[in-house]
Amino acid sequence: MKISIVIPCFNEEATLETIVNAVLRSPVWQTHDPELVIVNDCSSDRSAEIMERIKDARPSVIKIANHNVNMGKGAALQTGFDMVTGDVVIIQDADLEYDPNEYTLLLEPIVAGKADVVYGSRFQGGKPHRVLFYWHMLANTMLTTLSNMFTNLNLTDMETCYKVFRTDVLRKIRIQESRFGFEPEITAKVAKLKVPIYEVGISYYGRTYDEGKKIGLKDAFRALYCIIRYNIF
Image (cartoon, rainbow, N blue to C red; front, side, top):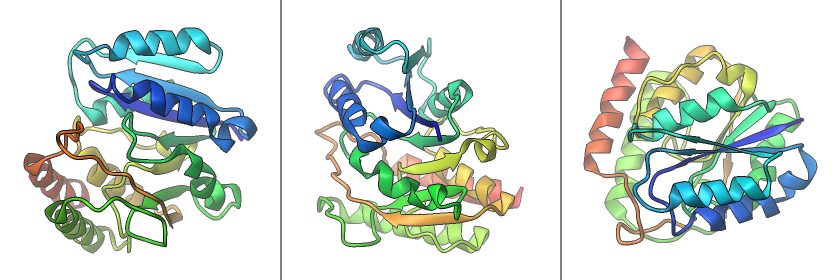
């Protein structure tokens, strides 16, 4: 089974090389014929330069793409999805909030033939997570609950970065949302496919806005809109 890991990147010069090294050291990298796809969403820092250096070190297994204008996380992911050649796709953020050592845990239901899609939940199980923003947690819970009401799923963390898809399932979906509306959009579209979805508990090392966190209140309102749009229309 070949694994493709897609990293959307926007102004992550401080963490990009660290997270790529963590991906390359993960157990999955040694056992699942992997490839890494990094998409630079028109970063204004040194991210593009770092990406080139990373690719030059491992050209056979690392692909890169660059957007000429900033288009958002959803658009960067769609670019990455179009480039993958693996049987399974894992989404990895370019920051250090999620641990690539947990790929094996995320892949278990797919490897066992039980799931076509797996979500990594920050709110399930006994994994460690950094204590941060109450209102972010509350908004996440509300959006996940509303999404569940429309999709009839019982997810605990719809907004999680860690989403894993069989590539043949992913090919049936075309992402329209360019920013963080990607999360409720793809959840709605996966639910409509009626494929088996699993959720596993993961650890979470969240960061503050001073440390580079980008999602905000307007993204929460967009997510609300997307839940309604992609489930009803």
